[in-house]
Image (cartoon, rainbow over all chains, first blue to last red; front, side, top):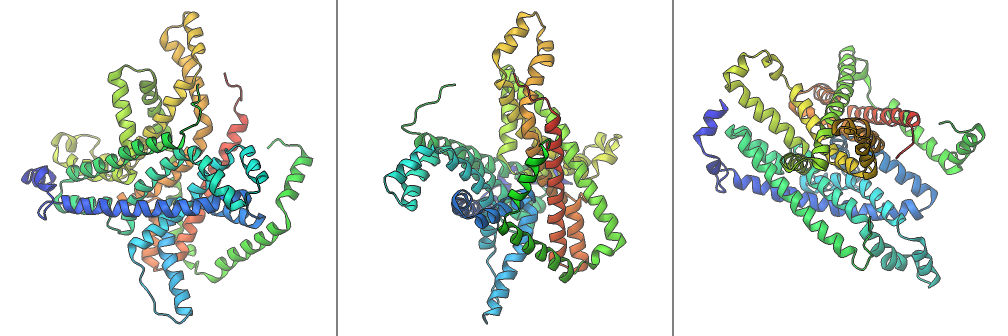
Length: 245
Length: 269
C-alpha cells in the first residue's frame, strides 16, 4: 500500500513547506527540538557546575546526596526517568500549590520537557565537570589561595577558565546526547522533530521520505555542532602547549 | 574483592560514618513507606507476574544478543577505518557518523515502519521462508539496536586498533607472519584487550536503550509496565517498580563485569 501513496506524490511535493507538503511541520518540529535541547543543556550545565563543586568541596551530606542523584540517573533509562518526572514533578508542584491554597496549574509541555531532560543532563554534566575540575593542576588553586582569593573568586578566575578546555570534549558529547534525547519526548507525545516526522509519515505512508529527511536534519545538527565544538575547544586551549604524542 | 580482611573492615567503618547511618535510616524509612503506603496489589496478580518475568527476560535477552552482534560487527568496521583501503574506510566512517548523529528512536522507526511497509509489497519476500519472521517486531528491534552498538563501538574499535603499538605489528611482520595471522594473533587480541574496560559501561548504556523497542510493540519490561498502568489506572507504583528493576539490572551488570575484570590478565603490551 505504501508505494502507491508514495508514488502519488514526489518526495519534493511531500516535503514542500506549505500545507499540502509536510516540510513546514518538520521544520517546526526541528525548532521545538532545538529549543528543548538548548534549554535542557543550559539547565544541565547549571546543575552540573553546582553538582561538580558540591561533589568536590561540599560537606559529607551534600556529597552523598549528589552521589545518589548521579548514580540513580545514570542507572535508570532516560525514557523511564522522563516518564517518572513527567508525572511526578507536575503532581508534586500541584500538591504544594493546593497545600498553599492556590489553584491547580497545568505546566506547559515545553517547560516540563526542558526540566525533565535538564535533570537527566545535570547528572552527566556533574560527572564531566567534576573530572575536568580535578584535572586542574592543584598548584594553580593553591597559588590562588596564597594570593588571598576567596573561594568564589578562585572558582571564577582560576578553576572555571582552566577546566573549560578539559571539559569541552565531554560537554560536546553531552550536547549531542541532548539533541538526540529530545527524540524521547516523542514517546510522551511532545511534538518535536521525531513526533512530527512520525505524524507526517503515518499520514502520507511515505515512511522513507520523511524518516530520511528527519535523519538528515539530525545529522546536520550533529555535524555542525561537532565543527562548532572543535572551534570552541581550539579557543579554550589557546596559549596551551600542544601535546605531542 | 581479594582485599585482606582488616582492610575490608576498615572500609566498612569508613563507609558507615554517623551521617551515613542517618541517611541510610531515612532511605530505609522511605522504602518502607513506599512498600506499605502505596498500592502494590497488582503485583499479586498471577497474570501480571508472568508478564513481568517474561518482560524482564526479554529485556536481558535483547541487551545481550544485540551487544554480541554489535561488537562482532564493530570489529570489521573499526578495522576498515583504522587500516582499510579508502573504499572500505569511507563507508565505515559514514556508517558510524550516521548512527552516532541520529537518535536511536529514529533509526528504529525507519527500520520498522519503513522496511516494514516496504516488505509486504515485494512478492518474493512475502513468499520466502523468512516472511513469518519479518512480520514480527523483534527482528527489527534486534537489528536496529545491534547496528547502534556497531556504530558506537566501531568508533571505539578504530581507536583501539590504532592504539596498538606499531612495533608489535612490525615484529610480527619480521617474524614472517602472513598479514591475516598477524591480525588474528597480534593485532586483534591487543585491540580487544584495550576495549574490554569500556564494555561494562557500554552494556549498561545498551540496557538503557532497550525500552525504546517498546514503541514498536516488543513486550519487554517497559512495555509490560506500560500495559499494567493502562489496565489498572495506577500511575506511580509500576513506574517505581520499573526504575527499581532497571537499577537491579544495572547493578547486576556492574557486579558481573567487576568479577570478570578481576579474572582478566592485566598485562598490556
